[in-house]
Length: 139
Image (spheres, rainbow, N blue to C red):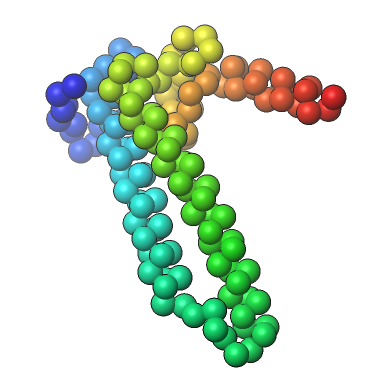
């Protein structure tokens, strides 16, 4: 797919053809920026963890540090999963399936994609999915 030049103030609008080249490029750049930010935060965490020693002589300080580190690692794990979803969304942009509900094939609303660019289901399909999960969880 050839790169489409975006005007700096471009924002997708409901009146446009859904997933036209400019809209796809807008979401591609948004996903790439988000991915870059997550990777930057991740490398900052690694540097911080390497610089911070767990060899604190004070037990309370060490416990506090270990708690912070565990929280940081959980956050990074969530971000790693998010990067995987971003990569998947970028592949969908390339193959032309981005922005369409995986269940119904219908377009996902622009408002939903703006709020959650990695969305794979329309709001309706997502709500059905969550209702099914709740129903089966109660069994």
